[in-house]
Image (tube, rainbow, N blue to C red; front, side):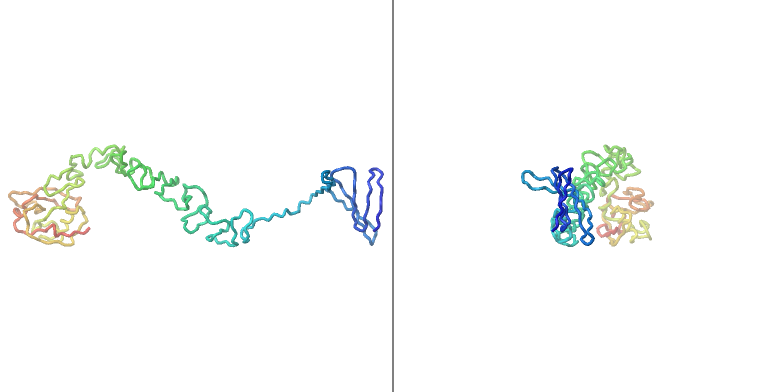
Length: 354
């Protein structure tokens, strides 16, 4: 190997050129970062070309005596492996990695075990919105929010007390109780008909009292009531201020006493008896029997011109609430005495349909 030595008068540096290795090494008394210039020789032509390497720290560590060399090459690898979910290898922050995208097995496609709140609908969950908001449509238990679950869902509920008691301050519909909702709030309201307009049988506007005229005030309002309290007639009750004829035992409908349809007792008369006994204007008779009258009370002959001495009938007028379109009479007793032997419809055999 041929070595050439050169002397640089200004610095006293010595440079050795290794033509076999084509490298130039430089040393200097100055510490720090040095620039090393080398030349390579083309052996065929005998020409050389300079090669400059920068960023080499030739500083010697006094403690160890070794030279610390640094470089600006940032392409070196630290040896760390980036986690890749789905490669079948548990890496980095992964809790699992089963190398598939099946969301309902033991490991989801996000490389973590399935659970409520992962935004994946798993078996046993009715919903999963992937958030921790307990008051939206999907609770933190991954159950669809419903009225009565005891959780307040502000977007659709005023309250939720987890019961169906409409008498407290939270209705079964999860709406706050208030005057005008048509529900009686125990301890707070006297009445609440949903209108609260002080009309008959209604409620005052503040729910603290009934309207000025109402069923139960002891006064019969002719426009709305048949009775208020007692009916005033033996054998007839008063229910919600209307006559209750459910216990009336017989109806006379002989010849001109017919209540409906042809003269005499027939199915049309039995229909009227059903309407009066049930209080349903749409009631019809399915079966009935004609029997001899008794001296109990009942519906007597409906003909206003019928002659009875004494006439024990009580005129009740038109009872359109029952669907009866002719004046109704009632007799408290002695039907057999006033009507003779003419057959009557027996109430105990009357079968009504609605």
